[in-house]
Each structure stands twice: as C-alpha cells, then as structure tokens.
Image 1: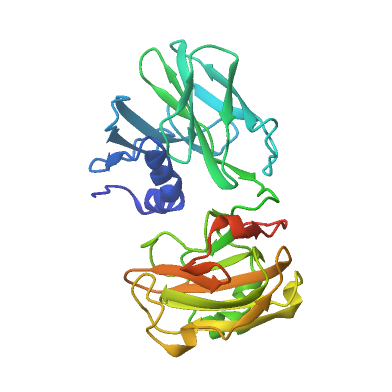
Image 2: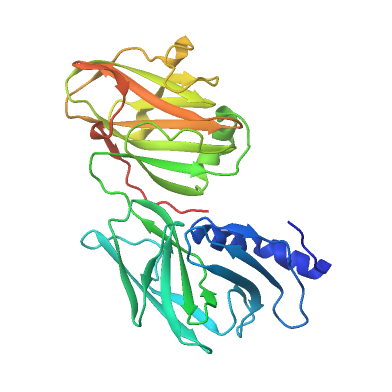
Length: 336
C-alpha cells in the first residue's frame, strides 16, 4: 500500500487506520485497494476505493471532519446512527433484538440502510423507519456497523457499536474469555502479573471444552463454568494444547476451592492426551447431578494453536467434555 500525505495527515491516518480497516472487514471481508491516498486542501483527508466480492458494488470512503469536529468515514452529507439499543449489554426478548437506525441524506434520496453484524452479509432495510430484527443472537460480544446508501451509490457509515449478549444459565456451553494481542510470558508469569484480573478483549461461549484450532498468535484464554457428572464415581481428566494449558477443578461450585489437576506445558498436536504424564489427572470422585467449578487457562504464542480437555468415567469412554455436561459461569464482564 502506498500513502502520499503530509506528516500531520499521516498521523491522522494512523489514528484512524483501525476504523478504516474495520469497515472494510464489515463489508463482506472486502479486499481494499489503498494505492491512491491524497491530502486535499479541504477537510476531506483520505480516500480510497474498495471492491466488494459479494457484489454490493464499488465503495468509496473518505475521512472527513463532521460539523461536530469529529472525524468520520463515508460521504459528507449522508449520516446514519444506531438509535436502539443504546446500551452495550442487551438481553434478547423472545430470542431476538430489535435494531433501529436514523439516517439522512443532503443529496440524493437514500435507497437502503444495511445492518452489518460481525462482518456478515447485512440485514438491509429499504425504507424509513429503518428497523429490523436480529434473531437468535449468540451469547458474546458482537460488532454492529450501519451503512446508508443513496440512489447515486454514495455511502455514509456509522460508528461501530459493540453489543454484548449475556450467556444463559443453561447447560450446553462454557464461558470463554480472550485477551488478544498479548505476549506477556508463560501462564505462571501472567497469573502472577494479574493478566486474568484485567478486562478481556472479547468473550463468548464454547459448545464443548475445546477451542477452534489456529485462532491466531499471542493471546490468552480462560474457560470458566460448571461441570455436572452424569453418574457418581471416579473420573480422570486430560488436557492437550498448543502452547500451554492449566486445568483446574473445584470440590464444589465455589471457584475459591479450585485445584490444578492437569498441565500441558509444551505444545502437542490436537487431542494428543499422552505426550507427557502431567497432562493426566489422578482419579477424582464426582457425584451425579452435583455441579463443580471447572476452569482452563490457555496460552498461545506463535504458530498453530489448539486446546481440548477430555474426561473418562462411569459409562464414559475418553472424550472431549461435551456441552451437555457444562454450564457457563454467569458474571458481569467489562471489556477493554
């Protein structure tokens, strides 16, 4: 990418680079072409052209100074903003969240407003009032971007809004918190350094005690929730990860009583339960129907990554702990 700009405008560009890249991702994972940035004499500072592979068309975006002296992207004269919900934490009603927007154009009439949720194909509304329904939102943190388009194809972009959908206190998943873009050492170092006391970058739930492979580099994760054994007896647990993982289990539903029962201290291939003896826990007695607190800490540095926790017990052959045995920890989470 080539940037031709003054020092001052380069600084402004760097300040807003994340926002600019963000809206490109929201437009169906666009491939951006930033080869012709300019610095005009008016208040419009940067513009570029992006091409949309899902055939929404060719988009042009600009950073410009709005009437309230804030820098925005899009076409001056087209404004769009979210009017509902206004709070960050939103509990669905009847399994859905109502989204409302206000949009205006000082030029050509508006043709539509698109609601882009987590970079997916938009929910589009073609006439005012710009209201739509987001059905069955997944628990976790989501990003919402609004794009208003006029009849000439010019666009106005809203600020990105974060919407947090709380987890439900029902069996079937476990809470997963992520600290992204972090390279602060081993698990022992970040535990003593207080990383897990800091707000996470994002959170969501997992349908089993296993993460998707190859999520990225330099991050930490914490899985928290409750485990319910289907039958009374002795259970054995295993942890497998790339890079590091610590597995904790409490004697009851109190996190304060947790003890570390298994460790994966070196990277292993997915579900490799026998790479090192410390990956396996001693037999642990569990009572049918009784919830016990379970926690996993996970560190990823570079290269591939994976994490899984397995168990074996009465009537259960060795397997990844399924969602039906898990309940997520319900807690208020503040994101950084």
